[in-house]
Amino acid sequence: MNAIPRTSSLDSTLALHREGYSFISKRCDELGTDIFRTRLMLHPVICMRGEDATRLFYEGGDVTRVGAMPSFVLRLLQDKDSVQQLDGEAHRRRKAMFVEVTMTETSVAAMAKRFRQHWLDHFKGQEEDCDLREAANLILTRAAADWIGIPPLLRDDDGKLAHRLARMIDSAGVPGPAAWLALLSRRSVERWLREVVVALREGSIEAGEGSALKTIGLTHRDADGRPLSHETAAVELLNLLRPIAAISRWIVFVAHALARNPQWQERFQRGHDDEMEGFVEEVRRLYPFFPFVGARVTRDIDWRGHMLRQGQWLLLDLYGTTHDPRLFPAPEKFSAERKLTWRDADFRFIPQGGGRPETGHRCPGEMITSEILKETVKLLCRPPVEIIPWDAAIPLGAIPASPVPPLRIARRAAAVD
Ligand code: HEM
Image 1 (tube, protein in one colour):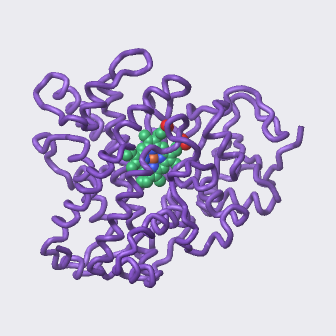
Image 2 (cartoon, rainbow, N blue to C red; image 1 turned 135 degrees about the vertical axis):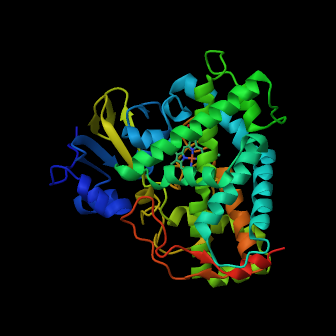
Image 3 (cartoon, rainbow, N blue to C red; image 1 turned 90 degrees about the vertical axis):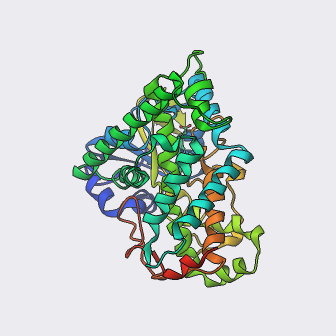
């Protein structure tokens, strides 16, 4: 067996907070390896990157997500009893529910249509410049709540909801007061979604045919043949609402890429819709969102000549893998000509996980993400919207990353439709 290289420092937590997205790759490069040992929050961890490591995480069943994230991160991003915490047949059955709800052409088109409509309504008559992420987060929250099928009657303040959803994502990077507030937000959103599920099951509201609310709240059966508990149904509804609202972060990056590459803005003004997918997928490769995912080994395995013991904590470097020059030549260059697509379900282009979403833990929301981003390109290019500043920096030390200063869209956005 080959020894796994080790960092010289006893614990790397401070370095991780300082370096953010580049933490794993920087050490891999220094040690001349794609795998190394260190400690985070005093716990031993093995960090990995690349195609083979992605296979270990997304196929074969040698790892689990249970016990792989600090509990505040788990509560903010997925939660216990959610699909991400299941393995084997239980996972496949629950995941089929997500695939049914999020991965059909009809459901994706319905989501994109609602997004477009809410965008146009939001900016109609808009007189002031506005913060793009904030606006997009609210627009997506409204579109997602409609698309899921939550009746307006049970939604008293979409603005507050949008704010709470954003807080969960914004605060998942660092423990502390912001994360505690985000956990409180989470609890109140979960309580409200539980009430929605109860109202549906008691018959005091109806869910539209084919809606996510109907599938999750009424028709789905888990591997044990039972419907989801009220609580778990609320967790999984939140597992749609929160990440859809989080697409606002990619929307900001799409705007940043358009502002930095005006030649693409011009191409899209003249049509060229067939090139949009390559453009938005390159945004998902290049820009920083999920830095890494965690897992634990379920049995002792010999992995590429290294012994990985049962229970070992692992981190897979998503950002480092999509910026590896061996996999993506000139990785720091924005190049929509790479023609990347989520459809390939491969193990290298992994901003939202790798492999097949039906069988592994890959994100089931990539189709929706990609369609929303294509719709965004149209909304920002036809007619052209001014994005300011065009040259904002995106520091990699903060997780999740955002442009500094935040991007704004100028008054002319109001001219749309
Ligand atoms: C899983 C990222 C959007 C629902 C994942 C995973 C990543 C990810 C990296 C894999 C986690 C793991 O391997 O443990 C993102 C990013 C998004 C996004 C960056 C951009 C906003 C969405 C959307 C939805 C969604 C729009 C739903 C409509 C889920 C669910 C899982 C998941 C339910 C768990 C899947 C499983 O464990 O089988 N996401 N996602 N995500 N995502 Fe997304």
